[in-house]
Amino acid sequence: MRILALLANRYVFFPGMFLSGMFVAGSALIAGCTPAQSQAETSAQQTPAAKRYQNNPAVEAFISDLAARHQFEPSALRALFEQAKYSDAVIKLEQPSPTPAPRNWHAYQSRFLNAERINAGVHFWRTHQAALQRAYQEFGVPPEIIVGIIGVETFYGRNMGNYPVLDVLTTLTFDYPARPNQLERGALFRKNLEAFLLWTRAAGLDPTRILGSYNGAVGIAQFMPSSVMQYAIDYDGDQKVDLYTSVVDAIGSIANYLRQHGWEAGRPVIWEIASDNGSLGIAQAGADGKIEPRRKLRELIKAGLLLNEKIDIEAESDTLVNIIDLPIPQQPTEYKLGLRNFAVITNYNRSFFYALSVYQLGQQVKQRLQMNETSRAMAIFPPLAL
Picture 1 (cartoon, rainbow, N blue to C red):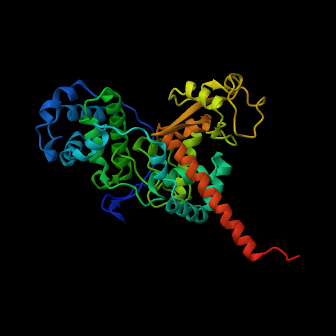
Picture 2 (cartoon, rainbow, N blue to C red; picture 1 turned 90 degrees about the vertical axis):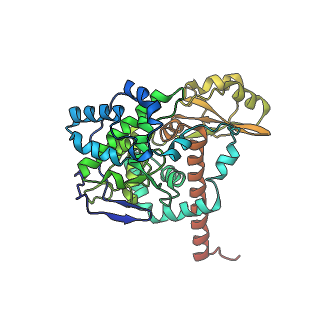
């Protein structure tokens, strides 16, 4: 694959943003937040947003590290970070609500499983059927999973984010809010800031002009910069990777991402649990919120759990599953069994609600597409009157 390198002054206009291209390079990881970050935190709170990262000790340490390991020009990075602005909006979005609402599966589900998004998914599938089928054949990821991810992430490319990615990643690297997971999250964004700078340098992009989500994800696939570098591919054969305007590249990149994270071709995503009180009681007792499947199906069957599925229980007895709990205020909690492929989807977003919404949206789009095709066939070839 040839890396796309465009001149910094050659921009392509997209609604709400300017870009000059996308590319894939090698992976890069670095250590977490430096002690200088916490030492400078108090004084940084007093610094105007436009000057916050100028002469900042944590930023200077980061610049020195990149200069040593990746041959960046320190003066160029200092000039860049002088333009980076602290984003109060991003910090507020990253902060947990002071009065969190109870988890509500139905409320979350309704954001994505609605007629408008399902119909848009049908149109998307029809338009890109060839690429979806090719990805299925080459990566083993069914079209409905890719359609579900793109539908949930960006409403099929309509909502790719309007936050300056440089501001987002700089803010979340050097000013991540004080929380129990501050070091872990700060290190994650630091890794992605490094990946972002490597990516834009190699492609000749202006880092100040790339827009994305409030946590720095970009394009139709909403890949973080480190994922762009590791998993994005040129799937339309034009010798460049473009996750903003090439839907085909996005389809291939998502399929590659899922396969690299352990997608099992031809295997289910979930199994439905029967609705009898005994099965629901076993599910309730065993639901621990863990993502990875670690219980053998036979253990749950032996305890008395029943499935609302036509499967060979004996053949699947050693299959590892986890119990997915879906709380709904003032209503009984719903439960399902998640298999390995369900856990793979959560690499995008480690949430039961997210992964199940992706799966169910894809299934709804598939069913609607099949219904439409059946109706069209009957209109062309009506049944014979007897």
